[in-house]
Length: 80
Image (cartoon, rainbow, N blue to C red):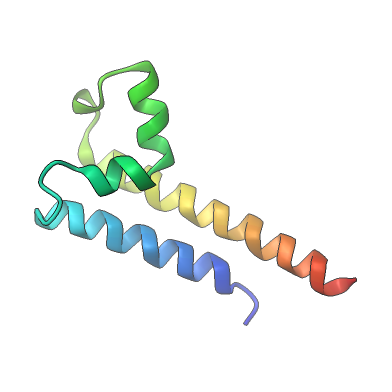
């Protein structure tokens, strides 16, 4: 499969955001641990002033980009 990492990483991010949105993560610990945009936002500002759906969107996009990088790297390794 050509974009396996991209799909799996994006699915992980969607599940992560869905768990947080559904309330199964009441203190947002999973989101704080696994969302790179939350790390950046929290380093420079208060996370509570940013709209949650923007945080979810940035989380999904960042995991998708990490997946694309992993797919590209796997393709380069396989090409050798």
